Image 1 (spheres, helix red, strand yellow):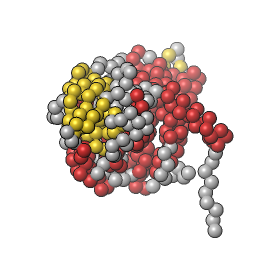
Image 2: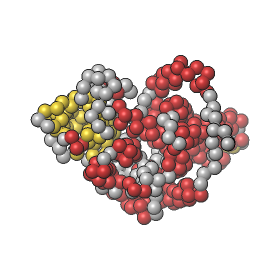
Image 3: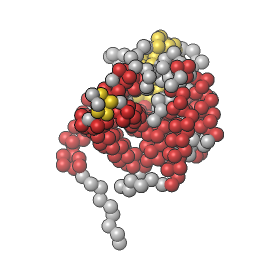
Image 4: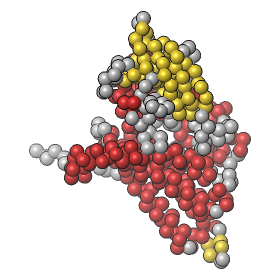
Length: 404
């Protein structure tokens, strides 16, 4: 694998870095920039999004035919990391969850009519979207085979009944991708459906309060009681829901890691700046060996995370599934983010615990990283499954075809 990036990717990275530095990060210091759920205020976000579009820094994850720029997964890894130097960055560039993953799966699996109806408005920034999969016990969480929400065929329509919860962005979403059970087949029993918020037969039961800052639209519990969906809004085919989840979640887990690396680097940056000027007992914090060990260790772990993410992105770009690589990246970077925020707060002392920096925001946000898109333990089980099946080949190198 060649770790050099193309001039095109570097150009996008540099322009994103400039906009983050000059236009987005200054907003973080103003309490008026935040909504009631600790995210960027919607009207302010819309102004920043318009600026990103004018700069050609919009929807980097999509191909040009879909309204993006087609950088590929490696290019996304470079640019997403740069975006999330600011806590507001990904939303500004239309690269934040859940829209990010929803747009990619619609681009990959949607019919031309579905792309026009459901994808294009998200790309244009006219609507937001949500992915409704997770359910309360005894329904599906990390294991989609446990999904209990049902879609039954009646009178030429699919009728949906059931419950979902912790559905990110649901309170402000217009377009939804819904996972429901259409048969008892263990592998082909799930189907993905598309529906609009204005359709009858469903409701938001509550917006669930969480310990951290929320994405726009929060994390909601939904109830379905007779939602009708036509065949034209089946995504990927009846019984192909597992493929939809795999297509969406594999890349979405990795894009989380790309963004979390940016936040981890920002935490180190804040810690370095403070350690360089703060003195105690006649010694700068930056000159204390204990602080040097903490920051040096974080620098190493961040680079390890970048290598794991880049290997997974490279594997996806060349047509692989990168299941092992994504799981390893997800475990490592999720824990790294929490560690980086924790150490940065420790170095900053009471300042880090206050709202004078974004460290406390990052710290509260970081705890969810080890849960979303599969808990650490689930990904470790996935890795063990590969190890059990592959043995020593778990670590094998791919060998290039010989020259003839």
